[in-house]
Image (cartoon, rainbow, N blue to C red; front, side, top):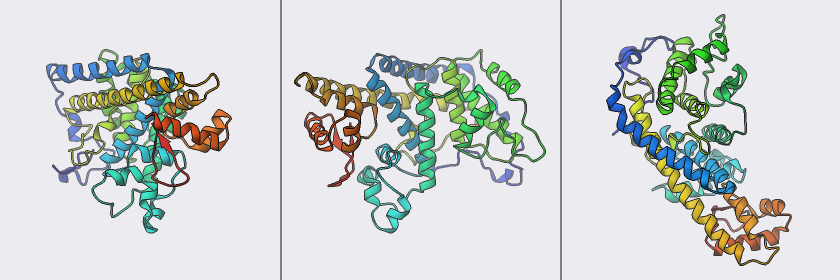
Length: 370
């Protein structure tokens, strides 16, 4: 099956201005009974993920949020036909790798995308664009902060909403109007109406419909085309505001990781809520697998720490590694107050215990992941 755009670009609509209403927006909604099964499956998987994350250690909770955010970023890139492994995004975010474009020109792509090329059938003819990777990392940071409540709610003000949207695309409506001479609406009034529209629906359905509604309204209001990644951020914010999730972010994009041949969902289709729920359920199941992996690593680290003397630091080092998607000997030494050589010895012990493994394939300037 060939990939299709996230937006339904029909030939008959080629002359339609980008802010005009779309025919797909008026499609009949799915009957309620068609949503019962996908809603139940999504609620079940997401509830188990959030509850089990809440029962995990603080280090595992933080690490899960960070890794799920990177998986979401990688999934979004996959939808854009760009395959970058989440581990390579972690290396880039930690500034342990550089420009992919420069690396391709110098035939050093394996140095900046080790996990991606290891799992790919062949080296790409074109390197993933640096701009796309940085935008994916911006998405990961937004989702991680939202999951761990390290930032203000993007819907708190027009400024915070516009800033969050602006990191992911051109459209910032209704925080900012891109039409000269046309002011943006009063943000407080718009927000009240927008949130009230989903009050009577289950939180996940409200999130799905809110994403579609925002995308339609933004597309009608201004020529800056709203991006699907922006709309799904709106969905994540809505789920968080409803108190649906306490310990994890709303997963969606990671269901697409490594599956670029799938038909892409379109937010204006009548069956969008069912598609959204199915992707959330699959993404939550992937989150459960990652949580199991982190908990197993935490158990191995605890067993190692139990064999240490009173002042052993393997347990502290393991907690740092669980929290952070990638660690280095230099960074670990700084956080532990140890020497780089001492940190390397600790890393070797964690590797021997099956807690850490090397992520770059280098002989020097190495990085390690759980």
